[in-house]
Every structure is written in structure tokens, then in C-alpha cells.
Length: 364
Image 1 (cartoon, rainbow, N blue to C red):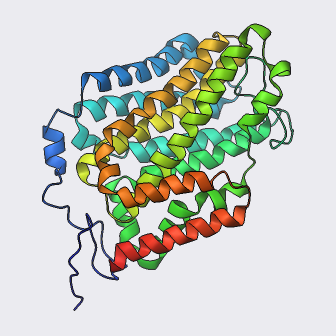
Image 2: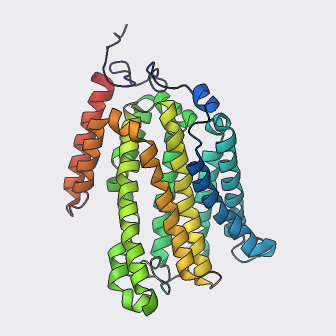
Image 3: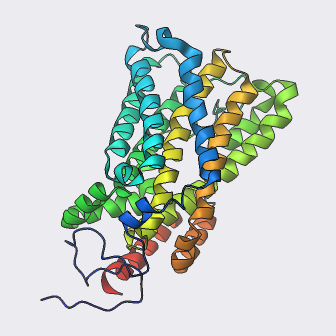
């Protein structure tokens, strides 16, 4: 029989047990699902205000376009699933805030992810008329008031949709337990997506660069809006880096070693709802800007507003950072390594992190 190894680490698993079903039992101080569901404290006034602002956007889009817009024959699949997403997204937030326990056990993360993937794949089919230009050296199109999204940007979106889908699986109890019960296959999947998604999977897709938005600014932005878009593009770079590392990498590292309890998962799932909204509604708002249905500044402010509000989760997850201080240090180091242009150095760093956290998970 395997020996239970005492550990000072939160949520330690049995030594070397690759077939452990789900995370180790939560420590005594961790709040249970029932406690989180019964305690209204997480749903603060600021949370309601943030979510109300988030929900105002899909409602605005639904009313602005009207029923006829959603059921036109042109781009029909993309339109119908866009409407399906907005309705699901609104319903998911309502259930999350009024009955979190039901939301945590629901299929919303999977159905919204599936809808998002269908939207992106249908966009790849329908929007082949977009400019076929090299994403590496061209304007990304999103960060200006006259820019046009290149077709490579649509391809790139498929990677981010897959990444969000992975997150919705990993932070949902059913998906997480399925991975943990799949033995070596589940562990291999975790290692690939937790540590190497940006080095092994991301290179399979085109990559647009925010720096090109500055390079092409004089051609893609009205003179009166240059200062606005420069400031907002810098804000986007900062929000993206914070989200990628301090929410993306850090939370997956902590989840990998069972360093997250149920109370903390509340805010992670809150962030995932914001995250999928950024991806879907941000693109939608850009389309409305392109069709001159909304003011360019308003559209871009909505997009960046979602990113800003999503980073609110960092404040609410302070206990995760303090209880996983070593992982926080690793993540911060990784954010610095991210600026290195040598891909093999980044791969080596993630390999070292994987080795350290595998040891912590199974042998600490």
C-alpha cells in the first residue's frame, strides 16, 4: 500500500499517485462548496457593478442589431451562434451570481466554449475575403479606428478560443477530475496545456503584434484619435501581460499542484467568464465599429474595459498568491523570460518549471 506522505503544502496528493481522482482533500481552513454557496460575502456591490457593466454590452448588442440581423442568410451559422453565445453569456452570469453552486456544477463553461469554437471556425470559413497579409509584419487591425482585421487575425483567434476552452475544462470539477482519473494520458494533457501551450501549440497559429499598431498608426488612425489609441494600446499590452502570466500561468501552476481551494475557485470562474467575454464581445464590437454602427472610441473602450475589469480578479485572489508564494516567484520570473526572443530558452524555462512542480505535486 502506498504511504501517505505528510506535507506542509496545501492540497498535497499521495506520493507518485498518477491515478488520483481529483485534487487531494482540502485543508481544514478551506471553505467547502456549500460554504461558498451559502455565504453571500463574495458577491459584493463592486462585483455586481462590474458584472452589470459586462452584461450591459451583450444586451446593447442584442437590442442594437434587432432580430433581423441575427437571422440573415449571409454568414448564417456565424450569426446564429453569435446570438446563442450572447444569450448563454447573460444567463451564465445570472446563475453565477444568484446560485453559484448550480453554476459550478453546470455545463455553461462547456456549452459557451463549444459555441465560441463554432463561431471562430465559421469565421474562418465565411471571412476568407479579409486581407491575406503577413500578421508578423502588418497592422493587427484591432487597435485603430480605420484598420481592417487581417485573415491571420481570425486564425490566431482559434488558438485563444482553444486556450479558453482548456481553462473552462481545467477549472471545472468534472473536467478536472476526468483529467486526474485518466492517468498518464491526463497528466500529459496537463503538462502540454499548463506549461507548453505558448511554445508547442501557439506557434501553429499566426501571431499579430501590438507593436505594429504603433508602426502603422499614421495610416490606420485618424489624427484626432492617435493619442487615444496610443494610450489604450499601451493599456492593452499591460492588461494582456498581467492576464497571461498572473492569471493564466500562475493559476494553472497552482491548480496543477492542487494549491487552490473551492473558495478561491469562485473568483477564478468569475475571471473565466470575463475572459470569454473579452474574446467574443471584443471581436463583435470591432465588427460594429467597422460597419460604422458604433463610435470607434466607444467600441475600443468596451473592449479594453472588459480587460480592465477582468484584472479585478487579481485583487480578489490575493490569498492564492500568498499561499503559493514560490509559484508566484516562478511566474514573475517567467514573465521576464517571456521577453527573451530565443524560443528554446523559454521552452527550457517551462521545462524546468514543469519538473519542479511535478516534484512538488507527487514527491514533496
